[in-house]
Image (tube, rainbow over all chains, first blue to last red; front, side):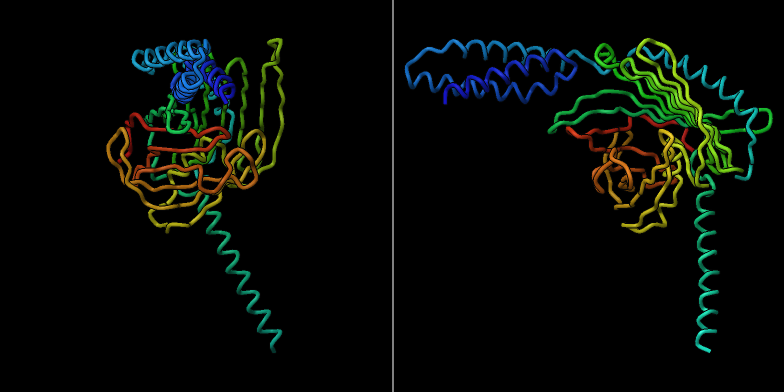
Length: 111
Length: 271
């Protein structure tokens, strides 16, 4: 039982950290919650069995790191548009090219 | 006697059939009452997984006038660009444009110029409505950076339109005359293949958007012979229930989670 929680806790904690680093940081919230609950369960079980488990610390550490990153990104990241210069340039080139093509095309006003 | 009257009835039916086909044919050349040049619609595309939204890209839809020596055309331009935080991860800079007749929204030239995380593709369709053909030109970037070009001539049905024009023609439909449940099929040319999509009017709904609370027509879009847009009620689009019929909100289903398109601003509208 304990082992299951340790494995699940570790997997979700690592997943949360990975997601928190990528731009998908919003989605890290779900694994953070799962990892945190697993950590609590392990803590509860080991207290009952009177054993000490080191993994709890690691899980909580990862959870804290990813939570901090997610909150930081959520607060400071604005949805800013990257450079669109290249895109605008391509649009401009395409427009010039299209004008030339359209000159040669037969255009029926009634269609 | 009976055979004669039957034959006459059949003849009458044939006439009705032709009249009916003519009406359908005329419908595809319906007059443009909705789209004016100088219109600019800005959207934010986001990805939604179990209630958590992540903004991904900005989508713009613009129209402008293009003059050639013989005529004036309407340029429908759609661009998509990912937000800065995504650019190192997966950079998208897409351009879709179509040059159409401003009166009837008949396409003459379509271009798709996409760059998605290192992948580059260019597609061009030159429509010839007299012969019902399209000259397609495709350029793709190979792994070593060289360009691979293919040219083809395709035969089309007369009402086939490109993707961008189809999006705009949905706005030009007479939705106010339709009843909930009514459906219309449109043929779209995409990746050198004709695909039939069906647009169904679901209901009227009032939703709140960034440009205010709007009464909207809710339309469901599905693909009849494709795999991209599956399900009959999972790809929805909300058009304002006024004369402008601006798309204010769209929802589409993708294998993991679903995507959303929300309007940020609208300017240069006709009404």
